Length: 443
Image 1 (cartoon, helix red, strand yellow):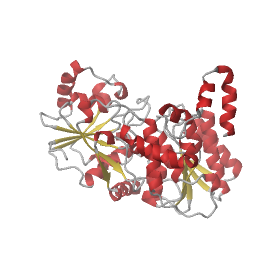
Image 2: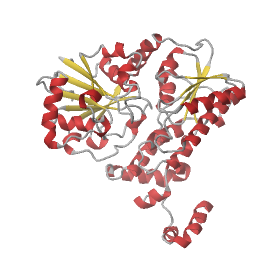
Image 3: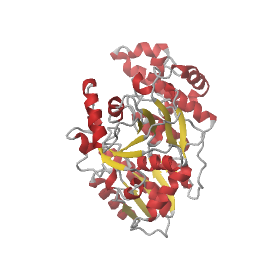
Image 4: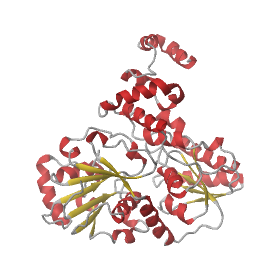
């Protein structure tokens, strides 16, 4: 049920999250309130050198929806938001302090948070122990299972999971173990906000000619691959686009990417005799989807691939999502479901014909069953009720979906697709491990 509190506190750390929250407000998903406070948090590793949400283009127009805007980093300095974990004995003092600093008075609080498994979201839930809680999904992570067991005093207060309908006909797994209602943020409100911001930007690119976009991520920063491997991945995207006939390309690197990556992309473009511009502004990819004639969008497993296809009807392709699935460790890595969705729904760049048309992205019954099976294998302790569905899917479809699972994980959970008993015995003995590997490859 919707909170009847008079004070709504929205906590955001990204521009994408802010646009999503504002789309929810504009779409009527929150009742009227006497006070709406926007709390901006910079959760990056080095917030001193990374642009915060208030510094982003378009922030002024969006912040006008709120009665007050505050910055968490300055209010809790020198503590870092992601490492902020007040002790229980300190929580009442923090509540008094923040109520005064944020002008909350003594009103009941309705918290609207992202990433509920970690701080600062968990810290705020403990500081405001009586607050109603809504969670919003910042991208494809909403389809993933909850990463950790939430304390009962937090999980029991969460009423809704607000999310964009990035994969139509697919319900999020996040927080479903608590019976939380998933509520779709209106996509038309999201794209309308994007349009207003995008139209106000000083675009320095030729919007009259078709361009292809490469969306960078922070794969090496997460330790998923080395910086050299990530660079080669993006160079592969560039080469693949050129082979398909694209002559104008824009590379949007992740803000944490080093300058060397942009230089490598520009050098390769010069060698291939095509134009490759590097987007240096901290803009959302969706601004370009709206403003430019985008012929194709390529990435590894970025949420931008889904918004491009679902909300803008653009041609999309992935490169590296399939091989990434084998690299993610441990198996319960929260990037697994986003990578699974992209690998299953998006064509691979290297296999595309030159004149393909946009594919309709929607969740088939098989995909829904796949997400349930992968989600259960990731977090069996949180979703024991999904075991039968996972067993049925693996029993019928494992051979055709092996790339989404690791046999050692299935063996540990005693699921269909587990290693044969003889191979399990061999793997226990060091001298026999080479033979065991040869047996697995032969299968």
